[in-house]
Amino acid sequence: MLLSDVDAHRGLINGITTVAENDITAYASSILDEAPERVAAQLRAAVPAVVSQYGDAAALGGALFYETHRPKPGLVADLAAPSIGETLTGALGWAMTPLFRPDEFELGAAEAVNRLGGVVQKHVALSDRETIAAASRRDNLSTGVERFARASACSFCALMSSHNGSHWHNNCKCVSVPTWKDSPAPQSEVLVRFAEASDGARQALLDARRAHPEWGSLSPRKFLRRHPEFALTNRNLTRVMRERYGFAH
Ligand SMILES: [Zn+2]
Image 1: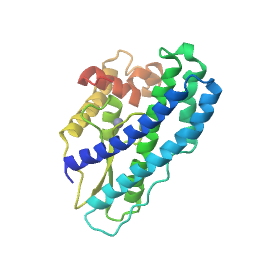
Image 2: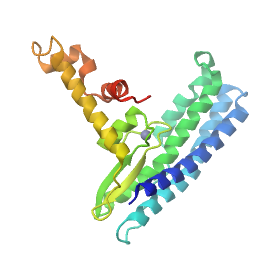
Image 3: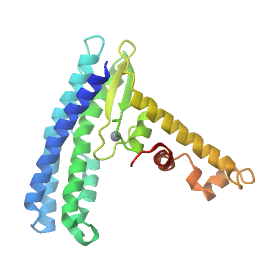
Image 4: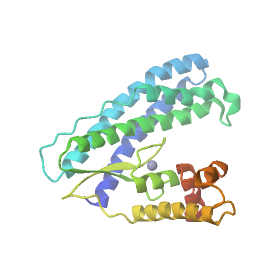
């Protein structure tokens, strides 16, 4: 596979999620001046419909991406079911909070529209990622899936890409790339740079511990309980990546 194939797939999925986001944000904006309870009820019905419709398109995109690049024909990827379960319900609760507490948000109730766009983007894109992950799991030729973040990715996605993590945030433009022995994922300078940044951040946290005056006089566990900023957590790793490697977020 070529890097341009990965970018083409990212472009396809991005196109689908953008139309889905535009659909839901246009609808939400058009009903925003109704009572919050009414807006929420209408969105609770509309969002799963949008996620289903565009999620099916994203799943199809993922299946074709998988089947086209598999070195041998013979595996038909199953399309992932749309992500309209409890995770979406929970995310919707978060997204609609500004409807009910507009005073707490700079944009007031309109902040709910922004949040809805992100939630829809994530749940539509999940259909692509899940389709590829499921095909890879039942493909006896598969050597797994690799996460490809964009060059402009945030520190979290750079970290996730370097560890092949599978947490996705709203508006994440990472794509999953299937790999096979005879068709590995393409070389990517961006991913090499991200891996160096995440290894460097890890080493920096370990070095900073050793340089601390209390390190050595406490057990490592006690030390980290007292100084959690040195633990190798995603939060600390991404903080160091932003500080030392110029990630903007
Ligand atoms: Zn991402």
